Length: 185
Image 1 (tube, rainbow, N blue to C red):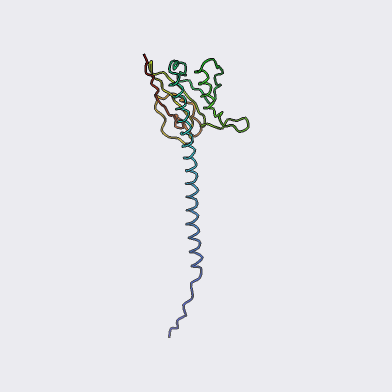
Image 2: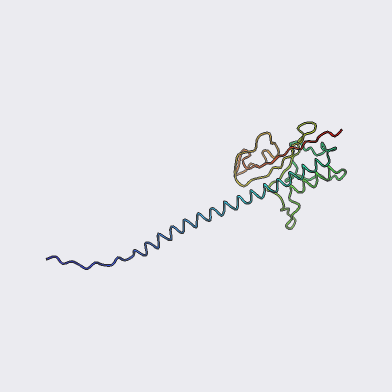
């Protein structure tokens, strides 16, 4: 006659369930941490773009308000801002505007110690004359990650933002606007 043994209670099943739950939670927390990092990068990119738009509109308004001397604002493709010394002349409203814009591009509005902190990373600005009464104002800066490079028609800051993380201007960001001066006769 065969004797049956009484069923033995399972042991360790709860421990395995706890371990599986901990692994799932760990992956979830890692995903949340990665998402947080991406959100911070996106927030900084957004902040830099808004600062660039403010400085772009600032120069466009300065040119429009000094319409008789608009040609005095032209920098061509050579930029002012980060890495450059700002103009020191205060002989005309256009020279004062160029100096103030250069300092703003360098972040002089907010300082920490002796360092300028109030602008985009590597902010540069250009004013090009496209025709007798049309000017293109451009603000360029360095992004944190590579993206599509700005069009080749936007030459401001070209080649200035290549480095270990980016090449072919993929870290260069740029915003432009056109200022048209209507002849008042």
